[in-house]
Amino acid sequence: MKILHTSDWHLGHTIYNYDRTEEQTDMLNQMVEIVNNEKPDLFLLCGDVYHTAQPSASVQTMFVNALMNIHNANPEMTIVITAGNHDSGSRHEIFSAALETMKIYTIGNLTKENFDKHIIEIPNKGYVIAIPYTHERNIPEGFFQQIIDYTIKQNTNNLPIIMSAHTTVKGCDFLGHDHASEYTVGGIDTFDIDQMGEGYDYLALGHIHHEQFVHSGRHNVRYSGSPIQISFDENYPHSISIIEIDKHGDIPNTKKIEINNINPLVTLPTKGFTTWEEAKELLQNFPNDSSAYIRLNIEIEDFIPVDANATAINIANTKQCKFCYINAKRKTQINSEEISTMTIEEFQNESPINIVKRYTKDTNTIFNDEMIELLNAVIEEVSNK
Image 1: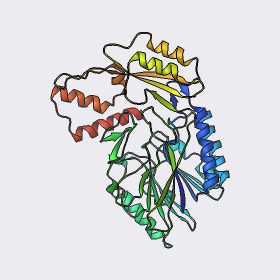
Image 2 (image 1 turned 90 degrees about the horizontal axis):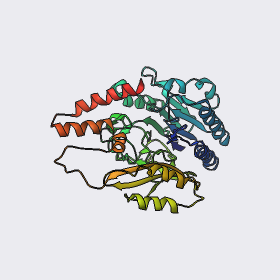
Image 3 (image 1 turned 60 degrees about the vertical axis):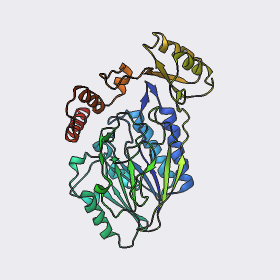
Image 4 (image 1 turned 90 degrees about the vertical axis):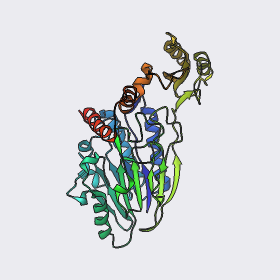
């Protein structure tokens, strides 16, 4: 079986009020071209189709048009799409019955009592166990192993078994994610890989934007990563994954296909921080005909010049690029013995967990793993509301 594994499209994402429809549309066109060239048996999209649970009509239209183009590029291919934590599970399933006539399966909500809803058979090719995002407290103990065992009983021809999930696996590289720690990334607590059972041939993961294998001992647990940058700190190549598995029990063969971003997110300087004057010069020297979103990393002793943003905007207005913001860092480090202080920019970009950690360290109070778990649950509930 040949699989195209992708995730975290975040359609409808804007960056500092700039609309990203142009590069998102171009990314979707590249998906169609890849399907046309590779002719996979399975197109697997592992969550975060949209950036918000209530995408606009135009964003939904963009997705549906792309979905039809992807289907038409290889009509024999099965398409499986699961909801991520940014998606609305219920909205995800509205047109599921109609889409299934074209072998397009959309799984939005976890049904614990009905395994068959989550198992899609690809005749003579393999099985997909499609698990959408749900908070770990809603997943019964042993659920993953039970549904894998249920699938294995049906797999009388020894075909590959693929499982998909949208979660944070302990030990993954979350480089580029805001509000991330060893305990939680993007509001999702870490899952131990052992909790996800065994018996699958490939575990296709979504949520982490940096493509990678996660250590499992078999080289078969993988994040495909997002196809284009979502934040400036994702300064690494973005891609989709092509997976090939001959039969149940085989180790997957994997290759990456990079996705070109016509409007990349660029930080000046490319490494580290510099002075405001040097950053301004870097922006002035940025090629006039290069389309990009620009962040300036500057080091400050006291304050950013009052007119810094206006100056940067005026420089960018003479070019194709779009200025987004100044990322400022203090030049002198705070002594570890002193109370923690932060700039407004640093505070806005810090995760709630890390802010509480700073506070408890300064006040010498307890903040243990149980309290972290409780706070994460509260943060998620507030975010949902």
